[in-house]
Image (cartoon, rainbow, N blue to C red; front, side, top):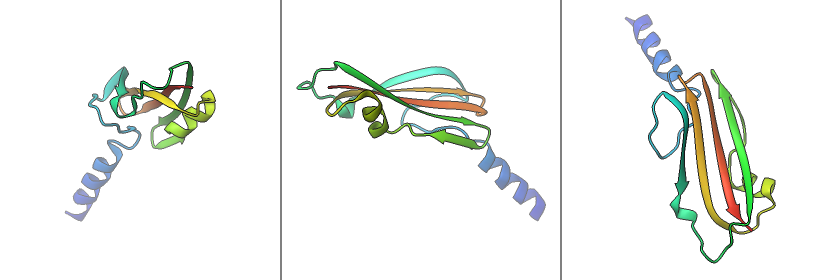
Length: 104
């Protein structure tokens, strides 16, 4: 019985180990899904520059920095107009999340 419970716990933990979670729904076979983040819209800033930051994962290993601050640094942005996200996930084996920041 203990072995069965241990196997169930390990299976539950491993089932989403490389899925980079977000606040919108996508299935286990998401080829390319994107959405805007409406919390960051500032119409007083022009969306003249674009900065991106990506985190990638395979099996149980994830690397990268997909934070908003990393995307701002990569694009030379000091003020944000809006933020977009894209997610790519294939069977929970290969996954990536890209944060796209627009601003000046």
